[in-house]
Amino acid sequence: MRTTVLITLLLPATSLAHFGLNYPPWRGESLTPTNTTISQWAYPCANVQSNGTRTPWPLTGGSVEVDLHHPWTYMFINLGFGPVVTNFNVSLNPGGALVNETGNGTLCYNHVALPGPATLGLTVTDGMLATLQVVTVGQTGSALYNCADIIFTSNATLLSSDQCTNSTGVSAQAVSTATNSTGSGSSATASGSSSSSTSSSGAGVLSRPSGTFLTVAAGLLGLIAYL
Image (spheres, rainbow, N blue to C red):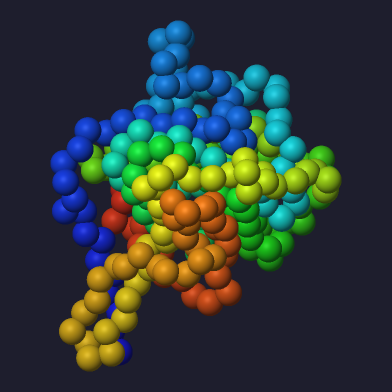
């Protein structure tokens, strides 16, 4: 049996646009900043420094909402622990896989699940500080960054179904590998699992599957080497 990973990037040419991080609220405006040093091209957080504000986030993971301004993008949600984060070494994408988003507008995940203690190397408890990093990669392969500072709290809640909705035509799915038992090869496909996808009909849940989930981001890692 042979498994081949193929990412097809032959999508219609579009101009790469920036994006907004609505929830948790981003550190600061990076779409039309008045400070010329701020740029979403800048790793790790668009050159936006922490303003001291932290959003309470549940101990098992919380809601994430982004405002996307382009027809499609690959998206990564990363996490780093501590008061001043320089290494976003925890992937909150399912199994570290690519998330392929299509459509212009709002994309909301009701629950982005944290990995377990064995994966994290620690147990998340009340009062722990962390920063979320959302990264989008478009057709040129260039990455855009935004960050939000959070504090883990046992009484924090997820966004409600009224608060966490997707714009019409906006959807996202985890890119998985398809195996061809004849050995003739396979291509990356968008997983239909409801645990790792979301559609325009409602917000989704970005959970971590229990089985092995092959990472297909390898072809892009050279372009976003800091991740």
